[in-house]
Image (cartoon, rainbow, N blue to C red; front, side, top):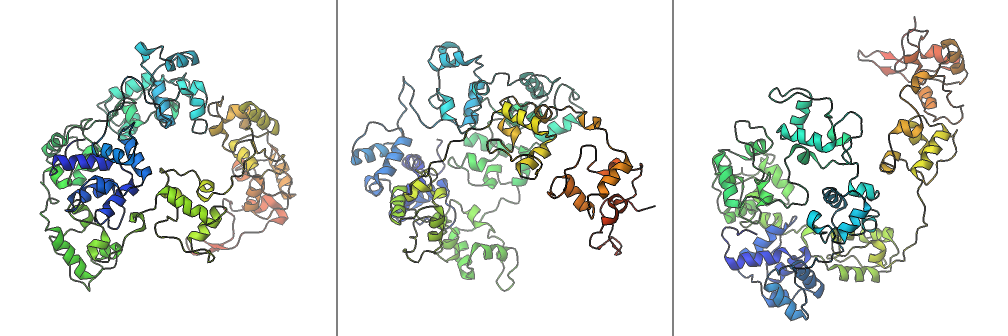
Length: 623
């Protein structure tokens, strides 16, 4: 981590140590040291530098002794501290700072890399089959392919069983370069050509495919306009396609903050709007953005010296102001006696004429201007003292779970009723117990409401899903002719067919994508010209059949065509669902003539000129 301007080496080391603590532990340390947390969502960096700026704060053994054992152990794991026993020894090891990872042998980890990132890494190895995968996992291909990282599992079919696993061929990327449609280049060749165009955004790519960039080679038929769809199996994002991102597995390293700020100031931009236009490629008069200059410097250099866009750009525009001290602005804001941040926004927008106007040298967004210079939340700024629920201290997960289990609740419904105060037989919820524990303890040990409440888990019966071959045979046997018919069958709107099996998926294309899926036409055993080969009845016979249905208007006709009227016979294949289009110019004289004596117009509605009409939508006037 680079040093932040204005911090001593000791404070910089303390900031690094605090960065590895959990949020709840960091709040406990702040409260124990007398640092006011403030209202609103407290970001990690903001709270760390607020603690370092407090005159009474000092990271010592006495301060860390207020944390429970589980928080100290979690911080030690993140700091790579191993082999330390005893609470005092663990605290001293934490104060010494991060340790180095053990060398010579990989670290065993049960927290695997995200499935899609892990699969992209394995695709980059270029392994040919499962035997080469096993040999690489055993370290037998160390010279050519390297060794297996500790966060890549040796048995991915177990680690990613419910997280995207679709078989070993999908995992190794076999045939991933082949496009979905014939006549296109393989993925790697097409990507190599796309990177040579030196395009910067997806919008520029779309303009190139339409021939709107004259200084580049014209579009080619073997290069798809939508590569994210044509190469779905090998697609890694638009940045990878256009050559704007590093290869998978490499860590993004930004230029040191002083050098990056010097480059940004050399552009002579005036404000954040011009910076945004520059990073989006809308300033052709300036050199392109280097790969080691971030799009959002506020996030990239939050711990390295970033103090605002005015300082980042050199203070050359109207945004470069010298704001008064924070205490002066806060004193003025408290004199207004505003109750909340919402009322403050209305005040600075000029919607409170009963109050004195905001001085010209006072900022409208003090939470951004004084982010690291004294702003401790809107409750402190406005003088209300309110603290948002998300900023209050939370009880550790183990203690909160122990309390929740003591209530004797049986499920999530009873917990929500208790959290809303609908259980008068129980004591009110404590302020340090979150109403939504799943979100508050998501990364701190949460394993579901049955575990949190101590309720017994009801085992679900195992149900084997239908295979692709079984589903295709079932769809062809049932006579399904389109994706719309398949979904109508799944929704129970096809009474002419047997009940939809519970083991069959509604989204068939997604479920069977890697099991042989080639499109709906192949799945249903049809071709593109099947819909034109059906011989329709003559107009007079089709009209005679329609009049026998007893339908009143076009709305009932379309509902019957879609199979939503169970008291009528299904629509034959030789009767069109849109007769007003099929028989236009071949006898069609309107819905009243088509449906016969049973026709009843819709409720009157007004036209653009104000005249009432009862003609059905799409009906042509009678001759």
